[in-house]
Image 1: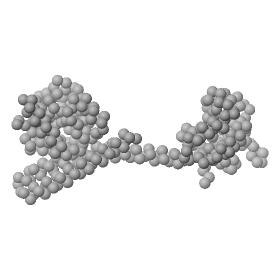
Image 2: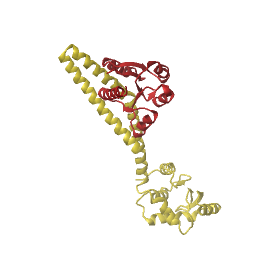
Image 3: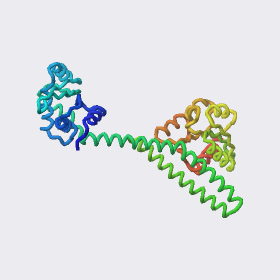
Image 4: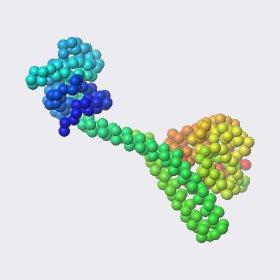
Length: 207
Length: 125
């Protein structure tokens, strides 16, 4: 599957991953896809990552070389221009950012350090994070709805039914039994709802 | 055994109404307030034995209510809340509530507590 580069860049930036951003959007899709697949693919082998290190870093433009070296030394971020040559000799411009390391020798290791913690493919991680966030928001919404609405009304209904059952018993035995059953039913609903609320609160707290 | 005098602070109109009617039917004397300001004004005059208060009130919360009541606190107090985590329960205890009921609770649960408090009052007198 070929993922649009703009989407890749946006997602990499969104999750704060030391990322590569293409500038401008190049027609050389193969180059970019290979570059990015080495970053976003958790199954990328060491050689692919080394390809990135060896294939991209040498092309940092001379004006940015010092900035890159300083960033390496200081473990800070850097934005540098990389001049690539396409197969037909035209320049391909890339903008790189946030790559740091203590030395050129250890750069391959540092790249691995950056990307290996992402055991799953990045897009799966993003989807999981968003789903998890959505689930938590929904759980809180339901919990609030239960608290402010249903739970309050059910509490009133439980007391109302119990009251009616008590009064009905004095008027008519059968009516009293029916009212008691109704009160019992509401009471069971109260207990059931209490379990749901309690369970939702525990899950929220655990998360 | 003397019936307990109950002061109920609950801002949900229907809940307050049915709780009050239910307790009155069982011979409890019940006064009500729908917010903290009214409760603070009325509780000292009510000479109630038990305060039953919702924690979430429109102009404050049940914990603040207890703090502001100070020496005017009734002998017993029961908190009601939709939230029942350990932290909520501890906070209610720290504020001076004897019990923390998690909404929705059954009328029987409240009755059991009131009977228990009634017996405690009896023993003290």
